Length: 274
Image 1 (cartoon, rainbow, N blue to C red):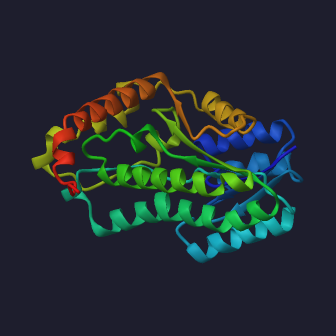
Image 2: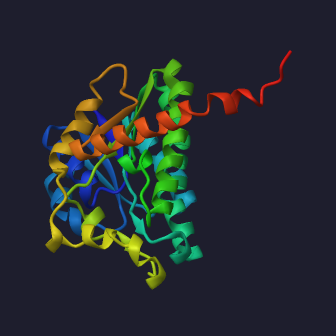
């Protein structure tokens, strides 16, 4: 049996993972902003579900949560950064509060939780870090610039950290889901104050409207694949969940590589010739 620390377990992947893990007998330290959506789990698993109130943008509270989790449970096998949300709107449509909040939630909080967990994972002889990103950590679309900024950023952080901590038997996996039928898309997503000048970029409004069709991803299946990844050794650095997400990622990466290959002469032209 394993002990998991998972942020944002009141809905979406966090809730699905927590439910599945508790059903199979694992222990979950799960963070929520309020306990409304997890009351049933609290009652059903009083010994296995350690529900903690946390606003991940409160950095001192994050420090305390990580410290208390490892000290109370003795060992945490898997740390899952799941909490986050989407912010839709073109760059000019965003205000300072929008920008600061999504960075604090999606990027800074993830970095701080990993930073604080590493000494404990190293001293206990290993463990696993799972970072929820998105295929939007590889593929960018208009009117989603700050979401992409946080996901591209956290992927770079995790890819570097993975190389640093492999020597300590700590694995890092970046999860890149495609669209799924979760509160992320149909409840928690934030939309900026939209400007008519950018109407051509506002196609995302159809994506957020359930009446225009639902996302293809099954959150329960995605949660199961994330849980299963912990048994893989070595840890997969990246996992794309969803066939559409994988197609879009491969197409974008192939396009990027093709562009780079046209720059051979340009790149070499700046080298010092001995």
